[in-house]
Image (cartoon, rainbow, N blue to C red; front, side, top):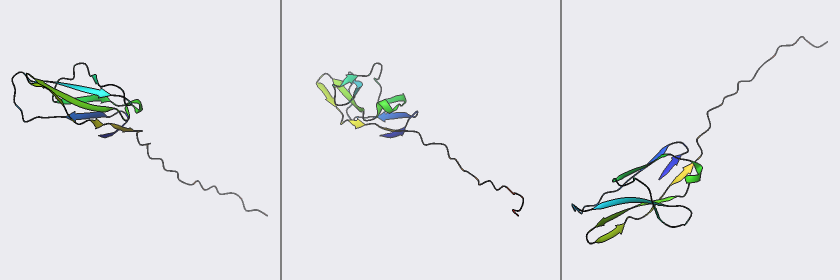
Length: 101
């Protein structure tokens, strides 16, 4: 997943298995650390909110759990790049001066 600073990154997951007792929990891992549950992220879609450069290379996955156990999705890595600078154009300025002797 690639995005620019300040834009939301949205992750979506689905599973063909239908289970009335199924739960799902999004997790993140920063810089090769441990997987950590994202509070409140229990829907099939997760939005990061406005991204920052500090979020670059953070991994996300979803864990599905039912009465038979848990399984995690493959991780997705977030790539965050600086916002593109505003376009700047410069027009040359011509100054007329008196003729030199």
